[in-house]
Image 1 (tube, rainbow, N blue to C red):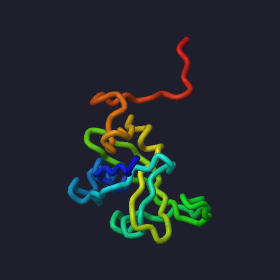
Image 2 (cartoon, rainbow, N blue to C red; image 1 turned 90 degrees about the vertical axis):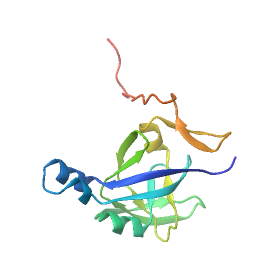
Image 3 (cartoon, rainbow, N blue to C red; image 1 turned 45 degrees about the vertical axis):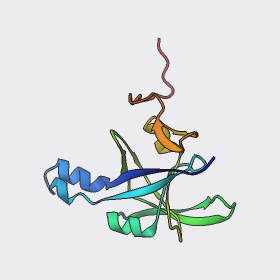
Length: 142
C-alpha cells in the first residue's frame, strides 16, 4: 500500500475562542492549509516548527517520544489546534517533531472525525460514508 495524503486546515484554537468572544475578527484567526501524510502508525498530529510558528502556538511541554525509525527524541507539545477536513473537525495538541519536514495526521484525529484510509485509492474517506458519526466511549445503555 502506498501513502495517503489529505488536505487539511489547521486553526489556532485560542484565536477561535477570541473570535467567538468578539475580541478578534474571524479573518484574524491564524490558520494554515497543509497537505498531510495520513499515518495510521502515528498517534496524533505531528507538525513542523514552521507550522507551529505560523499558527502562533505556544509550547506547553516537552516529552520523549519514539519516532517511526525506533529512535527516541524529545519533542514539544504545543497549544491545541483544530483540524478541519471537508465537513469534519477535531481538536488536538500537536507534537512538534524536531527537524520534521512533513505533517503527519495519526489515528486519534482520524477516529474522532470518523475517517479511514481507503487502501485501494489511497485516500481519506468517511468511515460511514458522508455521515459523520460520533462515538461515545465507555457509556452503557441502561
